[in-house]
Length: 168
Image (cartoon, rainbow, N blue to C red; front, top):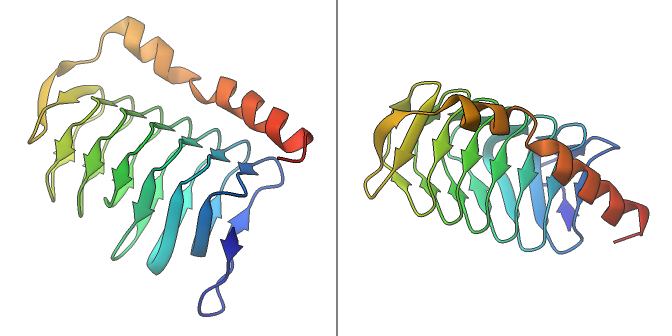
């Protein structure tokens, strides 16, 4: 379901897929080849939410913000993730059920482990591997992990196209 709020209508690229069971409202921008799966909520009622290209927002994830949220390209937001941060760079994996709290910034090529809780105001430098409650930087990502993050959105873009082509 895509809804306008206060005269602001979500802007969704033609190549993007948004499930009919997702809820997208307000000042939202979704880039080329991105996809939003069932149960996801993207609520831009207090500030804009900008989502880059080849980004996948998996089932039951919630994106909301008090000010502004910028999400880069080639991001995988796993199942049940809560994003209430300020900025997520490109080529990032947010593991299932991770929670990204207010005013956080995550650099490029980062992995936030499943179930991690990134506390308010935390700034995570590019190339970090982060886990825990509260989240802590454990180490830098490996070259193999970096390679996997480079084009992780491609497969989800193909799957989103498959769903869109079949009218789902």
